[in-house]
Amino acid sequence: MTDIGLNHIAGQWVEGGGGTIAVTDPATGEVVAQQALADAADVDRAVAAARACHGSGVLTDMRPLDRGRLVQRMADVFRANADEIATLLTREQGKPLWEARGEVENAAKYFEYFGNQASTVEGKSIPLGAGYLDFTLMEPYGVSAQIIPWNFPLEIAARSIACGIATGNACVVKSSEMTPLSSSWFAKAGEAVGLPVGALNVLSGYGHEAGAALAGHDDVDMIVFTGSVATGRTIATAAAQSIIPCVLELGGKSAAVVHPDADLDAFLASVRKGIFTNAGQVCSAMSRVIVHEDVHDDVADRIVALARSISVGPGLERTAFGPNMGPMVSEVQRDRAVRMVAEAEAAGATVASGGRPLNRPGAFMEPTVLTGVTPDMEIAREEVFGPVVSVMRWRDEDEAIRIANGTGYGLVAGVFTRDLDRAARAAGRLRAGQVFVNEWFAGGVETPFGGYGKSGYGREKGREALWNYVQTKNVAIRV
Ligand code: NAD
Image 1 (cartoon, rainbow, N blue to C red):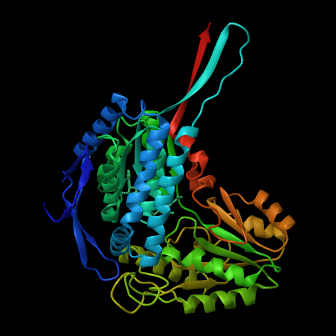
Image 2: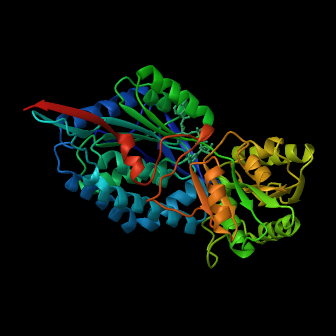
Image 3: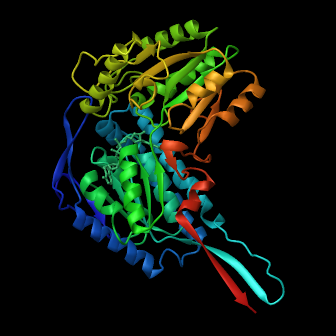
């Protein structure tokens, strides 16, 4: 056995035709492992294995309760190996170990939740009067392709795999070439619980090679993609060529609207997790804070103090709880964020805290607060995908909502106020797939999640997600 991360195709661990890549630790630049990459021929083999699995009926003939139990048991494998998986994730992606453990646990929760839902995917009977029996069947599409980004590689893949298999689809998963190592645990878990051969194929490879081959494959029946808007557009175009549905979970530029009556301590706790979790590389990050002018200066000062209190360091550092924030995934991503901050400053924003790389090796960036940001600036409109929060001000509620809704994105939004009437009114007016009131990242595996506007379409998480993976067949019987 070579010391190299492998692809899992048709029940076999194999290298691939796409060469290898050195997976590096963004905290140190050290090589963690080599990963074998899939090419288009490997994608063909994986899709063929998934098709054979689906065609054999082994998944669809199984009672959904039993299929769901297999999915649920994958949660046990993740929990039993949480330390090893979390350490791999921290090493290849950078997030602090305590965050990585949280991600492993969330992946397990998706297996638990969707495994538990397998037998609830029901059709209905339709009354047509005497002489007819009419009902609907909810049938899996067949072969589900799942293309995964590097920022939450476990959570994002887990929810698609869990839904896909629970509903009776065979899956081909392509992880990001930057985070392939922790993702190999999906294949290990599938083997451990006895998934049928071909039910779950896990590949890594470049987007332009394995990703494009999968998205454009003739024999794929539906695509689930999470990633950038630009790639989402390419994938939707490929799906349109094949006339297959796709689910797109794309970027965001999410805003928290802060009212003068907000509980500011609770709000600050939300800022901490909203923008500094995963070094801000979160599609639903609180990247904009829009504050009523009466409390604007106080809130801005408190956010600056919070940013300065964040400890930044390697995710595996063994302090009592580890660092508050790790490196970004790569120096390329870090340099892009630093450049966007410098451009914002040139456009008139004030760098109230941070804004620079950390003075040490690794892809570290200072927790950054920008004030004096106006809605027309690029920093207020485009995703940074880093630990950078833009603070803006509002005078009346209409203006706050207009700013919050003004980017074209619409993944999540938040309102902070003690007045629930005001919160409910804002929740109705904010153009986003999920609105948080008084706590950022409230909700969980059970709550539907997905974008309005440029943030994509379709819903992951919650029962809504299941409907992406099944199509309705009507059976009309003359009796
Ligand atoms: P990305 O779009 O560059 O890559 C995502 C995945 O797509 C990777 O596996 C990549 O290899 C693959 N890919 C790239 N080009 C492809 C192509 N032409 N055809 C097929 N596949 C291709 O995104 P990223 O840099 O990995 O992730 C960051 C982005 O993802 C951010 O914009 C972020 O907001 C978004 N994101 C969204 C969500 C969400 O749920 N809405 C969650 C996480 C990340």
